[in-house]
Every structure is written in C-alpha cells, then in structure tokens.
Image (cartoon, rainbow, N blue to C red; front, side):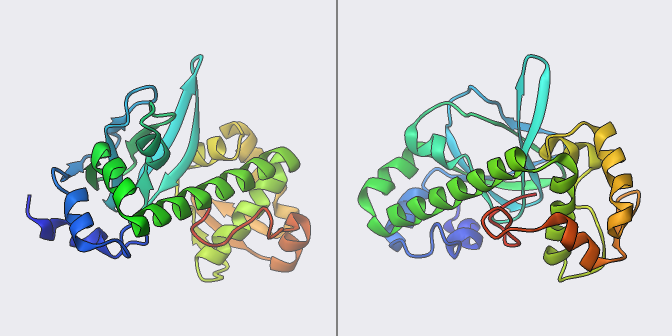
Length: 236
C-alpha cells in the first residue's frame, strides 16, 4: 500500500517526532480498512495483532462478563487503540465496534514493538500516550467511586458544555443507553437522573440538552480538576 495513505496519521503526537525511516518501517504491511456501522472489529481475549488508529468515524470500546455488557469509552478521529496490549503482546482486554461508518488504519503490532525498541522518540511518545490513558483511567475510577449517579451525570453535562464551546444547548454525542453504561447506570436510572437535574437548571428533550441555569448546575456538580477534564483526555 502506498505510503501516502498514511500521511493523515504522520503528524499525530504518537508518530510526529519519530524518524521517517522508522515511520516507513512501522507502516510496512499496514493497511486502511473501511468498516460499516455496528461492526465488531476486535474481541476481548483475542491476540492484539494490530494497533488501530481511527482515521474517520467513531468506535466504542466495550466489555462483557456473565451476560452483562458495559461501555468503556468512545473514540473519534485520530484516536488509537489497543496500544497497551500491542506493546505487551497480550490479549485484548476490551472489544471494539464501530458506532458509525469508520475508516481505520491497522498497523501490525510486531512492527510497533520493533520500532519501539529502535526509535527513542517513538518510544517516548508511546510512554506519554500510555501515561495519558492511565491518568484518564484514574479520573474515571474516582468519578465512579466518589460520586452519586446524579453527580456523575451533572458533571458529564458540564463537560459537554465545555466541549461544545461553552454552548448552553447541544446534542448528546452518543445514544442514551451507551451514556448510561459509561456512567455506570441503567437506562431507566439515567432517565430518572435527567428528570432530577431539572431543579439544577437542565432541560432534556430526546438527545437535546439545554442548560437553563449554569450557576445552579455548577454549584451542584462541584467539578474538580483532579477528576474532570474538558480536554480529550476523557471520553466520550
């Protein structure tokens, strides 16, 4: 496959500082694949044969156990997965499926491990990415363990408010049932939680969220910089 097919990922933080020869070696045997919506691309427990980069579209990472399923995170353009399993040469801990038509760059995991040992700039970028993911995981764990479901939802609404340029009205980026799973709630509890946010200045109609009293919502949510992040460090 022509190296130009990977120009779109060359400037991503993970690859930007590595030598061109290393990048060429990394993408040798790599390919770009288009997936339809609702396609499971990888399954937990299977070998991590490829590092995946979302070139376009939207991908959900999820996990199942004993007939239960939970949404872990949602990934958008320029996101990578499953990096830790790729570096460790271990089975996937999560499954991945497309939420919409998606174009994915698939880089052989063996290439990643080889270049990791040879290119210090690439190795540093991988450590930086894994550290970012670790911090996001700790923040998410604190959010789940320290807050009630209503407090988690209130802070999620505030996060989306910031991500939409401080807009007071916006659409939820994911379906409510997936949002409920991400927040550690059932769909029924999420519906009740949205109703319970009304006294705190939030109105909901379908996927549309309107913040009627930002001060009241902020006072209730009590956002914390050691838990909440308005950047891409946390998702969805």
